[in-house]
Image 1 (tube, rainbow, N blue to C red):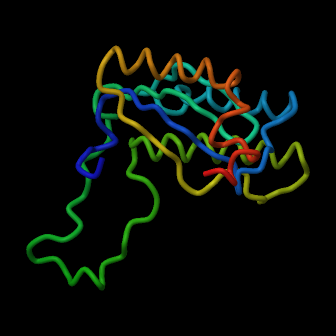
Image 2: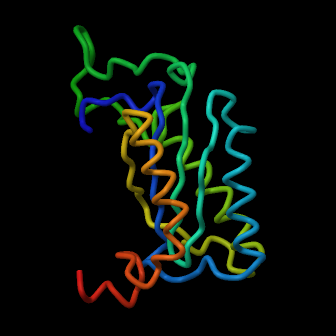
Length: 169
C-alpha cells in the first residue's frame, strides 16, 4: 500500500522467498536456524512480536506485529525549503529504522549469515531481495492468515512457490 507507513502499529502477513526460489530451507540444521532467527526478532526489536510461522522448502510465511509506531524517529523530510537540490542530496539506503522492512532485513541477514556459516558458503545469497507483505486489517483477516500459514505444508503440492508449479504460473 503506497500510502501506508510500515512503521505503524499493525499486524503484517509476510512471505519471504529464497534466492531464485531454490529449495534451500531443507534439513533440520537450516530449519532450526531460520526458526531461531524468526523467534529472535523480538529480542532485536522491542516493539515487535511474532505470531504464526511456517518454513517451506523455498519460502517462509509469518505474521509480524508492530506495536505503537515502532518507536522510531519521524521519517526525515528529504527535500524541503532551503534544501539543496535533490540531485545533490545523498539518498538514504535501506529500510526506514523501525519499519517492517527493517525487521525483515534483520531477520534475513541473521538467518543468511548463520545458514552460510553452516554450509561453508560465506556471502552466498540465501533470500530474494524483496518480500511480500499484506497489512492485516481485522481479527477475521488475522485468523485467515494464521489458517493459511498452518495449512501451507499440507498444500505444498499445489503451492505457487513449489518449483514444480512455476511453469504453470
